[in-house]
Image (cartoon, rainbow, N blue to C red; front, side, top):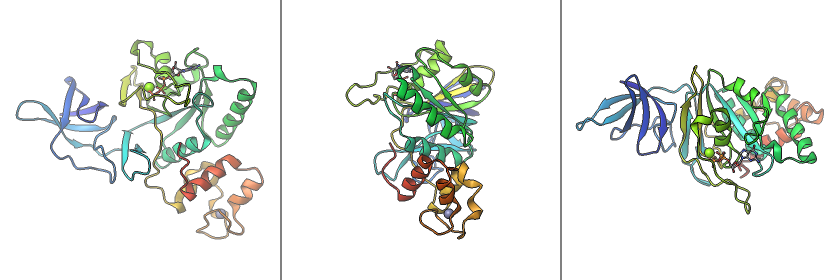
Length: 304
Ligand SMILES: Nc1nc2c(ncn2[C@@H]2O[C@H](COP(=O)(O)OP(=O)(O)OP(=O)(O)O)[C@@H](O)[C@H]2O)c(=O)[nH]1
Ligand SMILES: [Mg+2]
Ligand SMILES: [Zn+2]
C-alpha cells in the first residue's frame, strides 16, 4: 500500500492512504536517502507501507522525492534535518519587528528554494505593528524582492489584512509555510482556515523571539487540491549542497550576467572586469542582496 506522510513526530508518522489515515513506524533500518540528514522520512513523502507481525503498519520505502528542504539540526552541526518534501511552492513568512527577520536569513532561504527552483512567495506579517519608519522600510524590502521576481505580500494575520493575495497563491497547490518561530505561521493558517484552530504562542518580550509553539511539521488539506504544511520555526538554514562556484546561479538577478565576467570561474569578489560587481555599482543588483551573497561565500555565521 502507498501513502502520503502528513505528520511526523520522529517516532511515528500519520500517513494518508486509500483506506484512510493510519499511524506507521519505520521498518527497522530504513536507508537514509540523503547524506547527512538525520530523519529518513518527512512530511510530503510518498511511502510504501507493509504490515508487520503484529499487524502494525511499517514504512518500508520512500518514493524518490521531486524536491526537499533541509535545516541544520543544531548550531555548527554538520547534521541536518529534512523539513518537508515534494513541494509545489513555498511561502516564506517574515516579520520586520517582533521578531525581526534579517534579510540575510531571507536570502539564505531563497537560495535553498532556488536549488530546486521551487516558486516562493515572500510574505511580511504583522504590518499592524509598523510605525511610519517601519512602513517605509517595508516598501524598500518589498521592492528588492519584487524586482527580482519573487511575489510578495504584506499582511496582518491577526487583523485579517490583505489575505486575499495569499489565498490566491495557495490555491490548488502544496505549499510549505516556513519562517522563524513567532512570525505567525500558525496564526496565518488559522486566519485562512479557522476550523483548524492551530495552537499559537507568544513572542517573548525579553528576547523578542518565538517560543517554538509548533513542534512538528504537519500537512493540512483545505480541499480542492490546496494543501499547506505548517512547520516549526527555523533558526538556521543549511545550504547543504551549494558550492561557492555555483552560488551565484541561485541569485536570479545574477544569472543573466554570469557569462559576462572576464574570468569564467569568477567568484564576483575582487576580480577585474566582473559584471556582477559592475551591476552592484550601477544599482542593477541591490547592495543588500550582494552583501548576503558575500557572507554566504565567507560562510559567516549570519544564518539567523
Ligand atoms: N500584532 C500581530 N501579532 C501577530 C500577528 N500574527 C501573529 N501574531 C502573534 O505572534 C505570536 C506568534 O504567532 P504563531 O502563529 O504562534 O507563530 P509561529 O510562526 O507559528 O511560531 P512557531 O510555531 O513557534 O514557529 C502570537 O502571539 C500571535 O498572536 C499579526 O499579524 N500581528
Ligand atoms: Mg506555529
Ligand atoms: Zn564576476
